[in-house]
Length: 302
Image 1 (cartoon, rainbow, N blue to C red):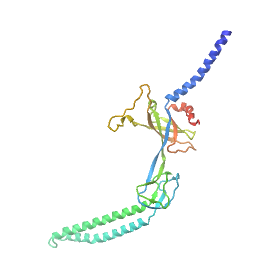
Image 2: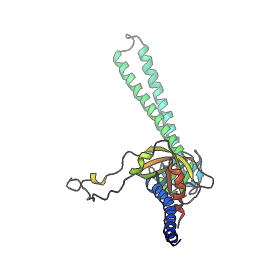
Image 3: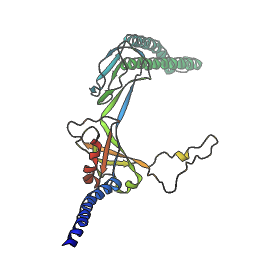
Image 4: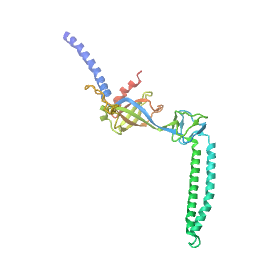
């Protein structure tokens, strides 16, 4: 009986250690080997709305972070100068048309006369004069179309459905053509960029289901692998000022796994979850999603 008591305590200790080690080992395998990462970010397509004409801003009809539909008016530039330019261009069109009409008629009439009635040397100058007049008329029409287009561009509209961001425009500002004063985040253009260690890429396939958990929201987002990156920057390929390769010393027994970007297409977003470009998340791909539910709780620890 004494021997049994002596053996019972170490056996019980071993049983407790084994019972504790098994789930910890499984958790460690998920943490180290499963295709999951905490290095994920929400990305989005961003359209920079660039002004195409310069002028004074007279009206701004949106606010920062507002949702807009394609075609909604964002801002209005003072149109008076552009209306005058259009009126002037249209007047030039009328003048050029009146100038080209008689010259074209004269050239046509002389070309239709018999050679004995009018000298041939007068036909070519008439044709040339008419051609120049018609070209000037066509140029005036093109200038009027440009003026009309510039007038239309004084009203800046949303190019797509999305969220206004980084609005830098107020009534009274002078807007310069070519500068971006507002950007729009495409409402349907969100995706996840997940950086996986190269040791986990063998378990990631295009089309595989993915589970995304944002750091600020607990409900998971579902998605699938859209593509896998085919290259990252190599610091050893950057030459020094002499053109020689710059090779960083690496200890033979220390090899850090490189991270490769994997693009995750978002399929469904739970109610109450807000997507914002630049926010961080954890991502599990394929069979890792089951064990990942336990590991991902680390994201919510303080």
